[in-house]
Length: 382
Image (cartoon, rainbow, N blue to C red; front, top):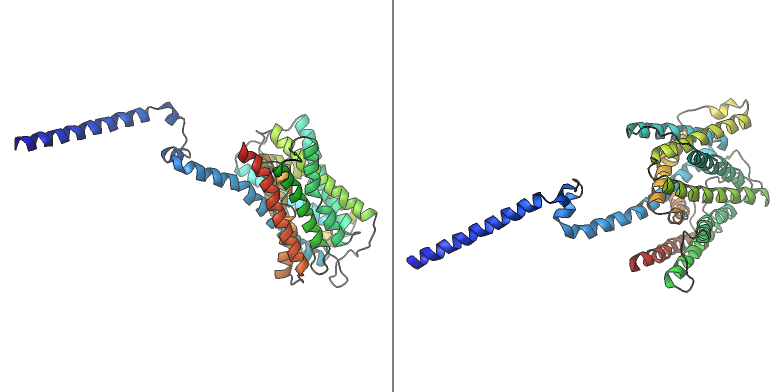
């Protein structure tokens, strides 16, 4: 009995000592200065360190998801614009209404975020004006005007050069690193060529229509296509150059002025663009009042979707992706819009779909995977 009592007492003393150690460790943890710096969102990662790698992977995948989502939204917009053009919508009035709706949506979002409207001054104000001229104003006018004089297939081939041009300019400015003799750099160059080749293959196949300003004699489009191999390609090429300038300047703006709210940045850009588009639309339409009339039809739906979803929400997403990565990363996804339009045109508009278009879409997807693999390898090696 004595030995049992001694063993029991020793066991109890060990348990008490163990509890004291736990309490002392808990007290040390509570008074740990690193714990005081933790936020509520960081506390689960501190308690479960093995989740850190999983959260990092999810955060790393967010730009890719956003890049794909942006192209899906743009592809849906292309289908809607095509239907509105068949209902005799004028593109100058469309651009005016679209930017006004986008401005209203961005102002609502900015006021809801409870952020005071910052006043841009100096260099930032000049950059905002340039951004408005590049994309909401001249870029959009040039692409719609150019598509009136250029066949859809040829225009799509020119637009597909945009990502490659952005990559080349970034390479020249040394913001994109390329070493010809290294495997990742070779993969990036190969991916760019595959993306362009896939877009060209899709564009040159007869059957499916892949541009937003499709015209045919049976569709009732208000603008008859007149092939002009000087004016059309020139206007579409100018729109591509302006789009590249817009993305690169947006990258510089979001990098240099990282504290400037993106929602207000896009609101200022759209406001200036809306003012310019309104002046042009009033000057071109003159006394044609029917072009400005609104009704419960596909044109109104096109104004609302293009304004709220594309010029407001998607533009904000694009600036966010550019801030998270860069302009090359964002524009590399743009050929996916061709694939999205091809699929939506086949399923919704009952357009024809050829095997060549399917092959071209597959080449675009594979080219994107190869390109992003090449860009990701140096980061993994580092």
